[in-house]
Each structure stands twice: as structure tokens, then as C-alpha cells.
Image (cartoon, rainbow, N blue to C red; front, side):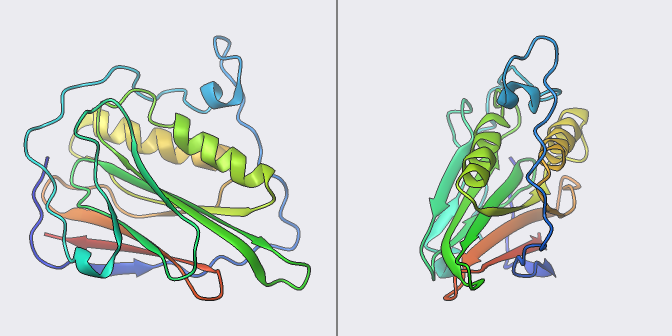
Length: 214
């Protein structure tokens, strides 16, 4: 895995998510002939066979201000995930040099428009993990079914390799096909690392930020 040193500089800042008044329910993806459920359908094109993880690890940058830092799973058999639901809580990926980071957040509103509930799940996808979109698709479907307005952000992925590009593009395509508004950061060039953070503000709105650094 790539090593990243120093404090990252922000490259973009997401706006708190405000729902469209005429937002339509998210479209379910069309399954392939061999897939019989929605989650299998949205995984078309994603790698199915795991690979051994590199022995070097990401270096967490400026993690003190974040209670929960989401690193990759060293077992290389699952997508690492953490979830927050309370105002003031935040999540942050460790360095995304060859890995891809995805955050899925949602708010449910009262009749007056104020936020009644918030939920954010962050995923750190190590290259070669089997079926990396399963848990992400499941979370999107659960939030939508519970009446949440869902938004996602994605960054990282190894832009120098075909496999890295395929994973990143497949995850982006899956979220877009599900009708989820998506904020996208750049692919990694193999040297510069990328980061995603998300915080539930005191009013329940969710703030997303994308960073890059060396």
C-alpha cells in the first residue's frame, strides 16, 4: 500500500445535503441474467476474487480530530466499515493511495424540514476484496427503505492500474445506477493519497470533505 506523510490539504468541500422537493425514489439496478436479486445486479463488473494485501499499511494523517478512522481490513477478505448516527460524530478514511473510499450518508426529516435522524457509513475498499459493492448497496437500500434522503461520496482508487480503475468505476456506476447523488474525488496517481471525511453537524445535517496530500 502507498505511504502518505504530512497533513493533507483540502481540495474540495461538500455542501450539506438538501433534498430536492420532487426527488423520485432511487431506481433499482437491472440484474444480469445470472443475478436474481438487486444487490447482485449492482455488482456487475466488480472483481470477485480476492488478492493478498500488501504488507505495508496506510499512515493515518491528522487523525486526532476524528474519533473514528476507517482503515482497510488487513484480512483482505472484507470491506472495512464504520457507522455513526449522533450529532458531533465524525469519520475519516486513512490514506487512499491504492484503496477506494466510499461514504454513504442519509438524513430523515420531520414535516417541518428539520432533521429527525442521521446515519453515515464509511467504507475502505482494499483492491481484490471479493464483491466490494454488496455492503454498500445494502446500506443504500436500507436507508432509502427507512425514508432517508441518501447522498454518497467517493475518492481514491489506483488510477495507475486497470484493476484499480475498474473497481472505482464499477462502484461509481453502481451508486449512480441506484439514483444516489454522488460527489466524486480524483483517482490516485500512485503517489498522492486521497482522503474522505464526514461529520454529522449539531443540526443533523451531514458535511462531506475530500482531501489530498503526500
